[in-house]
Figure 1 (cartoon, rainbow, N blue to C red):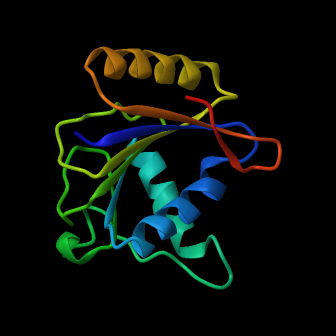
Figure 2: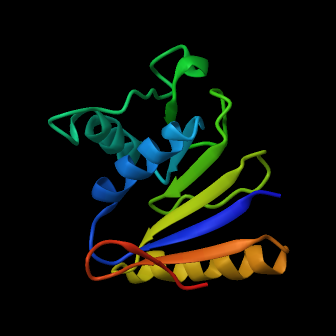
Length: 149
């Protein structure tokens, strides 16, 4: 059973946090899938991953790009895993699905958005009842991560 980690954003938006997490995943030799809660949000992340840094970009693809099996990072709104990812990120309200075979599953949510916070709490309770190994990380004042559970 995969580890499921919750990342509670407090100081920085998803756009600042996601690229470094994806870079760390790739450094580990893991391909990644990012499942967004909507097509619009997926398109925003698609644009952002090409331009988030002046020094680099994150090679990635979406369902419309072709050759998904070659992509180190794949953005989607569905449960597909065409690139053989070992880590899956659920963002912007995407519902955590534990049916895939991942080394790690990560839910990233904005703690300043009451609806997202409520959704995350609900998912935590459901996944805990299902017997999954959960970890909870919260952003500190400096933007770093502190393990809370």
